[in-house]
Length: 197
Image: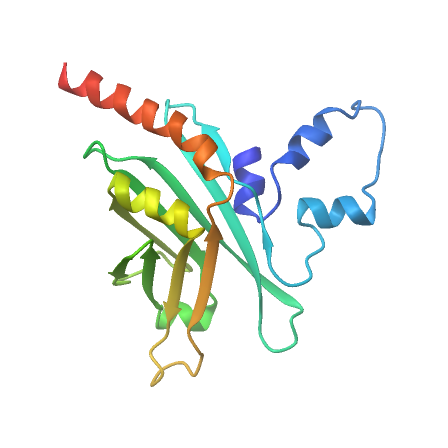
């Protein structure tokens, strides 16, 4: 449930808050709680990093950012970033997920990631219907540099001959990430040891 709400752009703390309410009672959210959990967004809303332990034993660190789209600012789109173990230890796999509009699906954006001092261009070929999912591997020093810089920067660039839409920069803050990186690196190291045995 927490993973689902993060993908929807909502703070996973909502699940914990809901668990405290007896099932036979009703409790509404205050305006402050709606803003805190990400239901009522004015401008950009970013969830905290969330550590997810999946049923197959996978360990992920997830975060989403919701940005207003269009000129009126009454529509919003959510992008998700994640970190997980790479098969090439000690590198870490960075994942990016973005839903596309019908128009964008025909000519998806090129994705450029700026991680610390590194710039990585990711070609988008044949996206799955209405979304872009990209991943790449980070070396430990690249990840540490991104934490020091304060964010992972993703730029979505459109073919201007097809879609007259400016590039959009999406920043995923690394605030709070260093507290979870130790657990991720430990998990990845133990998986690497199991594979080599």
